[in-house]
Amino acid sequence: MPSDAAHVSLKQIEAMRSGARVAVQTCMNVVPGNRVFVLTDEITHGIGRLLGEEASAVGAEVLVHDLEQYAERPILAMPDNLRFDLSHFKPHVTFYAASSQP
Image 1: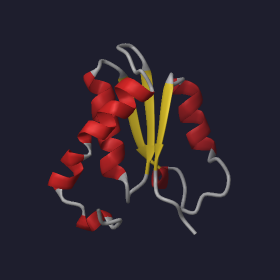
Image 2: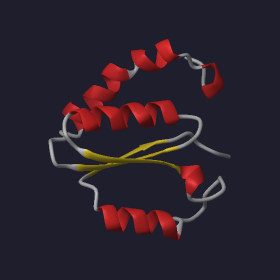
Image 3: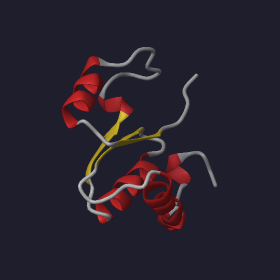
Image 4: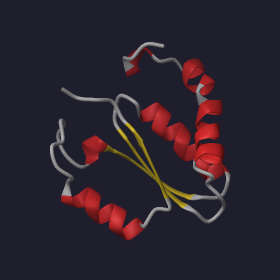
C-alpha cells in the first residue's frame, strides 16, 4: 500500500476497516461507554478515522485529533493543549496512529 496519503484510495481505506475493528474490539476491548481518544496526523488520518468509527460503532464516546492541530511537526515535547484535551476527556483507551517525522 502506498505510504503517500494522496495515493490511498477509498477502496484501500475500506480494506483496512477489519483491522481497525480488531484493534478496537479485540486488542483494546473497547466497550459501550468507554471514552476513546485517537491521535493521528494528516498522512494517516484515514486510519485514525477508521479507528474512531469502529469505536463509535460499539458505543464509545470518541475524539479524533490530528497532531497538526496541536503543533508544527516534528513535535519534540508534549503540547500543553494536547495535555489539556487528554486530562479533560480522560480516555479509557488511546490510539496513536501517526507517521514518523525526521
